[in-house]
Length: 239
Image (tube, rainbow, N blue to C red):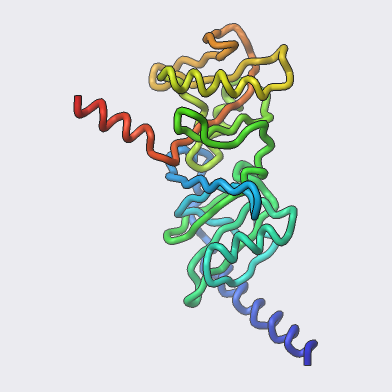
């Protein structure tokens, strides 16, 4: 009886997966710049681990190592964490339930697709980092273990939904990144790339000052899950 039950599950699951592949084939590629996506940061140090969630993106079938039906996003997250190498998952509506696609890859290593009503999340451990969390200025930072030239660092950050190379336009942001330098073990290479915005300048930040005489630096990506930038703009507009 147990063997028959397992066989039935396999057959049912195979039918679901075959139909899902037909539904998701031909989707638009999300591209390499995902910085405009809105994200949520869910901090959880004990149960499944902290993760970043966004809407409208899905993992394609070829980048998924396993697919499973679920009733909600929490079940997708639990399924991913039950298999330790799993780094990310997406959920899309299918047959009155959700179809979860599990992935071993980080966002930058996945050719994500655009799909309305889909959800995508990745665990912060998917990106090799020295720090991934909300700093005192209210912004989300990932101090990545990525050392390279400016174009590569900028592209690295933009491939993470809702992230970009850091902008440091306030005293609070400068203090936040200064504090992050305490986490860098290589004391001879305490510099990061910073994107100064629309003026097109690219500079290093080193020991509390900006400098532009280096060729490589760490990538520190910045995101705004709490809407701090919008709040600041609204406050400035009201003055």
